[in-house]
Length: 100
Ligand code: FES
Image (cartoon, rainbow, N blue to C red):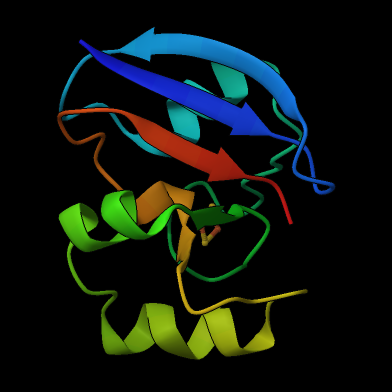
């Protein structure tokens, strides 16, 4: 199990949950009540699942694809460690996820 800490846009902690390694981060976030719409149903054609990961989690999650990078360029408050949650599998260790 991986401990995931969801943070509000101001950085304050909102909720901690445990998730199975390999689970889809968008599914985990929505089950934890996080405000991610996921409008396109994981088809990578929106950016309503945009999150900001801590640097270690970002490194473990692998590089975003070219298409994901394009969508992230359009996302609100995109950061160097931004990802689309629908494209991230929960990795081992702890993850810190901030809502933009
Ligand atoms: S749900 Fe649309 S890009 Fe992730």
